[in-house]
Length: 318
Image (cartoon, rainbow, N blue to C red):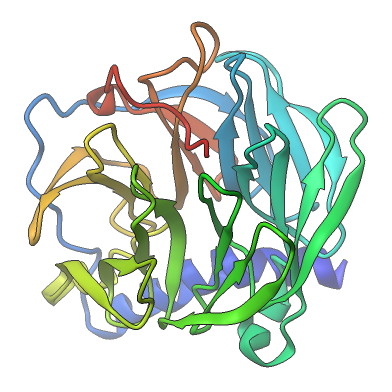
């Protein structure tokens, strides 16, 4: 019981209570809104998992959506919008981000629990391979600060982030782990550019905004968005990229989904989705299909963002 309640509190409580508490201390009721994008529209509920706090999300080539629950450590599959979620596996220590390896297998980040607060010191998180048919979970790399964000390069290199720490880990195709590949406070989410030259991350708590980090020189980064004023409390979370490598990022507190069109230029595709945690595009020709943008959240709900439709975009695959 302690684990279930406290683990939920780490992501929902700190993201929500601390940031919202800061807002209350300042005497304001919410984060400032970004201007609407052309064609912005309300989100459409696609699925829900009562009692779950969703952290990771991705879609396979058949259009089936997978998502992780911080509360139970379970991985769920939803075959199509409107259908019920089916648990397929359970991850010890807390299920975090999801991603695909070059061989097509599903990867999950473990350690999405209270340990992320001291993850830079303990490095207790890992990445595991999930057999989506049998539910078998096989660890493939450990010693990471956390893995609430995962990105996989074309050659199989894995990058893992911790928004409550400063270390971004790297796992080479051969399995060697560099837990301190980059030092970047509060890096959240992870998405690689199409050419694998840049790792895009949100900055949730420390100096909030969005940045990209050079893969060849991880000591070099460029900021795309620096949040100030009330937008400081928006809490950008698990981002994705569209077919033009534009960042699409949800915000926990302001409840918007932003598209970043250039440095310092961003707009809102939709609003009213507080507690958003992560975004993904669909894949395949049916179900959660290619081009369609989906949001998962700590409220256990999955929404489609119609204004984010991009015919050339799909869930991140190496």
